[in-house]
Image (cartoon, rainbow, N blue to C red; front, side, top):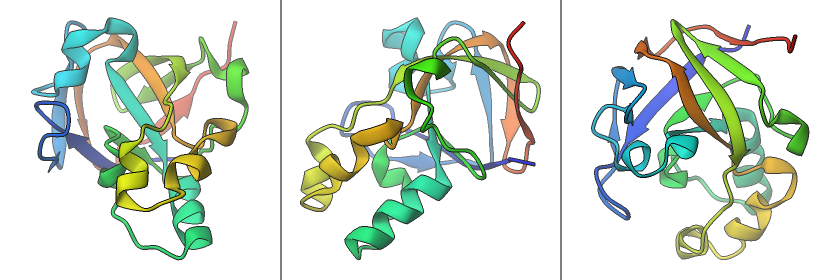
Length: 151
């Protein structure tokens, strides 16, 4: 079963990244003290697949911590390669509920980390997914993740 294996926030664009063991998630601001959730409710939380991140780093011959991608939540055992069909899909992490709203497009900062990383993250939603918060709560490392079936 997929689980949450990383939590990260940053208080401003290009700001320092803070990793957490647990964090409060709200309907208004997404992850507590993360600048992204306050700006756009459709993009409050970003998800990154550990499997995809590790594969891309291995293919490029680099070792980068997942938080350098600047995503909020690292999840194992899930890929986002279904593309546009994921929009509207709901993801439960512990007691919170998220709805996937868009792909997380890789930015030019990725090439500052390693030339070619932006291009490698571009296809098949490899850069992750953006979400809005539907149900608030506290999440922690190790929480189980359920992708809910559409009704």
